[in-house]
Length: 391
Image (tube, rainbow, N blue to C red; front, side, top):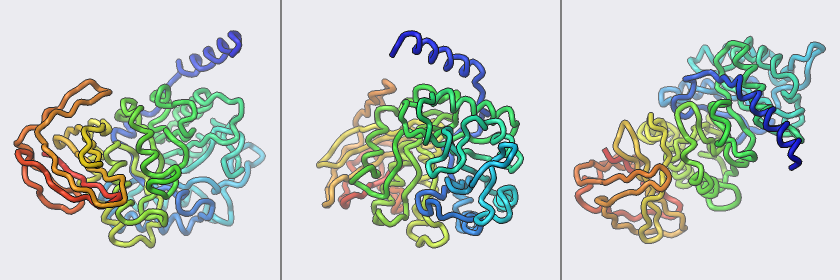
């Protein structure tokens, strides 16, 4: 890079950073909610969003901690003569304000989508150059959460563009969770803490377990950046595929386990109107959610390996630890694990000594597993995870 251009870029970033202000305290723990994209893509409407809100309010998800109902791309069609964005009048005949009011009436919060580029990923009006107008409109509509994408942003500087919207949101005066979605392309975990409440660390998730850009690949990508996680500043490994067609029930449950172990945002992405009881029980398991929502916000690290099974441990505040025995293989794997050994955290420089006085509890099967003075013995099915609380 030419030195003169590098200096201009540096000064631009510094000038934006000096005015840095995001709303504090909106994401003390990872946000929980639902987003339309993974299941519906562009096939979204006012009626569907209301039905999803009804489901969350009535099926136990709200009580379990899910708050945000977020419309992704394709809700908008153009801008008016004054530059304000217009919602699709066919898909959203009552308008966005009315939809937000409906969601609020259910005791939930409303989220919306836009993009830092000239157009959204589906070619709808982007936010570049319209940050103040968009933020003003979002505040008037009662938006509580903004997912901000990064398509059609050639030659733009992500930190500058995202900071413009951060400042516009703050200026508009309504506390709005700001979710940065630039896919980890400029390593936002290094700079986004003063800009957003969460930032995507990866490309889009696929509803696959051990293939493509699915569950295991994304989980592996997070281990190198886990120290960026903290209250009000979360690594976002993308929305959940729990309950979608590409994952079996066991794989969906393991997917949820790993996201909880990472202290990741829990944004459901399935059709909540039609999911079966087993998937609902996964999404609403309060012990699993307590691991994700623990106040420390420290993601798991690899403790040990036994017979091909990985043992991941997550330090916690409310409980002592959460432990995940992950079987990446397709066949059964037996473990016989001695709890009483030191877990050395390679990133935080801490060591955790597990004594024999802790009680072990199986989160998914909801049963006691004895205490840590004896080895834990289990057979773990392929693609499954034994999810344990030590307390």
